[in-house]
Length: 227
Image (cartoon, rainbow, N blue to C red; front, side, top):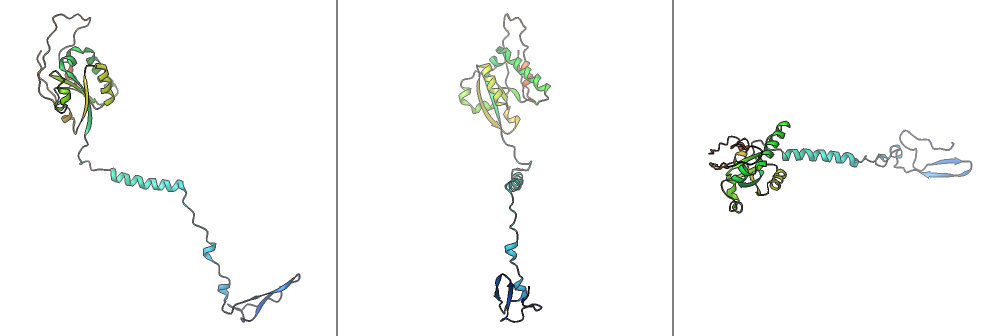
């Protein structure tokens, strides 16, 4: 291409000169060049315009990061010092007079021993006990006024099972309460239990021995009894 104005080392020779581009099929076009323009500005590029847009964080990974941060915060907030006080645990019970629970309702013994055997096979910790004259009954005046004394309660941390036992035994009253320790939950008043021996036993099987319930008394509980 002829007629192109020669460039100096960093600028055009004169501001009045024009660069001419010749084309055999088209008229010459003159492009004026500013005198204040230099080659650096002539060849400069808009870096902002050419720079690629920042890559957005996808919803998938942002949610993962957010979940991880939330999990850390949650762990820090929920963690507590083992020295903190224990939370109260809920206990469920059915209760009736001792004569009915321990001497008359004989299938009651079978149910308890069968459950204890099952727990042993599964290496499961016992979560049910018999409590003679439990202290927690003082908190249930609506129940105590309907009870013959002495009373016996079947207590467990398993609410659904206690509901089942209420239906199974029928003649019992049921409620629940909270306690901060097992000792507090199963505390009892010292009581002597006496059952009269029947003059004649007509059942085809021998009567259960007196004291069978001691297996299910709370740990360390010692109840005095008289035949």
